[in-house]
Image (cartoon, rainbow, N blue to C red; front, side, top):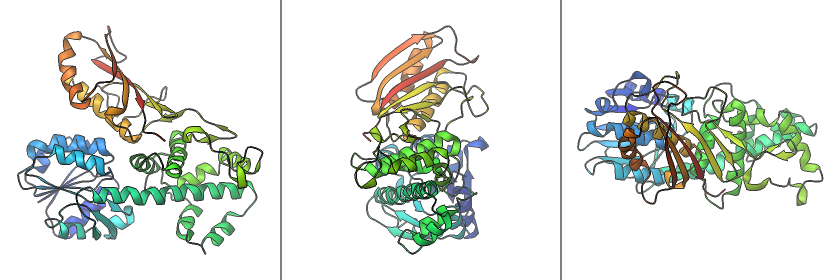
Length: 417
């Protein structure tokens, strides 16, 4: 039996293909309220297709009691090789692990024409993976995850570059269709055609593209870093759930046109290249925007009066996080339950920005009752290991919502951009 964990845009058609191929499949999604351990207890193969490294770790941690010896976990999300190594340490030695992220979107997922980038020993799951499309066996564990990020580090910035090209063309009176036709005769033709008319249906969410570039971040990746800043600017404008091609619409708006026009003005660098804003910050009109609001789609949305976090250069300031869900209702009655929820939400915010818990510089915790401190520390120690960050813990009479026991805010030093 196969347990398929995650029923998002990609998970639904992929699970359906397994059923159509004759496999017995149990699906799981968070909204159903079924314990993950119960969903995997009979499975020989457990497939994960989730949003980010934090979500994969959370779900597989919850699945541990149900994983049977000899089972194999096939991790198909985009989480990067470091997260794959962490999963190997998390899972029991009796449970196998294969990393197999995919290239392709919703259409290829439904048609079975994805490219599966597999790392590790796929001998026990090769036939199952072939249901999704062409399987490329790339080497030891982590090879598939590394290959996925390497590919996206080229494809995503190329689409952002073309979006800027369309913005430049519009600002200078160049016909959009004429430009797309000329580009069609170049190696960029296929990507230019995608951006000619941005997709109405979300095939590859803009927020996920920004997340993927964050996972692939490294000091010398200047083009990918600049592209990610552009995507985060569009995400802050409310386009995170739209298809990646919406970046073209965002950049051909007034701000995009102003930035394009400035390319030929006095602020331009040599050879007509616009001067880059410091620290990869996105341009807004003629001036660089110094603050970028961060509201990942993987965490409950705010009430609109604040952002979950704000990035300033290489620093991230995370607002006070408390245990409430998408409906604005308190999650859990005990400190252990609330603290676990809070730290999972923070983990997703960190993952969205390509950061980890060891990047936390300062953490401040507000407790309504100091007798809960031992339970809080037990949860915190599972996330913050090694040398602890600067820290302040205070007791308060109450928090902003009845029933809340904890609120946590942080300052994070992001990976160098």
